[in-house]
View 1: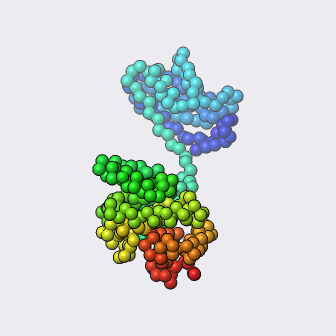
View 2: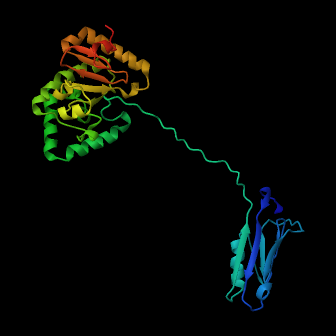
Length: 322
């Protein structure tokens, strides 16, 4: 190991270089000499096995910039790369010659091992988490448009459904159809589509629920950022998704909603649930309001029977203690 002083980077360990020069049997003589503060390089070329190259420590301390000075006859060049040395030698010897360099380096093998984060957030979902979260709104819209435009007849039917509802609740109170036509979160597993237009004979059933939904928003009980997650489910999808046998989703009078911004804010979620309970108690009967509240933050609204329930679909488990 050769220790040398580098003026620019301080004292470091330098690699040991062993140069083997393989030449033809023709006797040729050349010399490459570097005599500076780092090391002295000498190459002696003879015939046959007498060719050799070695690097020895420099006995002189030069004030010149550290580097390798290559001399061969009248040609000279400066550089820090051993590749330059090879190129110079190949230019010096026009005969079939080669210069091979074997370099042994001292490296630090006690390096810091990389660490990886293999812990992922364990998201939990309830059976009422039917479609997408707010981070996927753009993707949801693209998926909905693809679904809508995949069939020209479907697009015309959806447009007619939109006109029907707008005439009854007002265009300003009509939620986006990408929310209003959502089915169930397990649609793919069950072999259905993420969106479905309810049969025409059921269209009128959602109108009272849309009026209720709009009223809850206008009163500030539900924030404007509230999203609809599920509305109509066919009996087959409802059964596969684990819905209640008498689920109002099957007659298109119910909707499951959530508030994305309250998902990690239990205080605001609890405040909203209190407001829903008070509205249900004092005005719910006039709307025939069915209210289901779940610990996950999911909310069920329908206008198909004045009742309330919680996690096990029983009145006794309802969040509303009135």
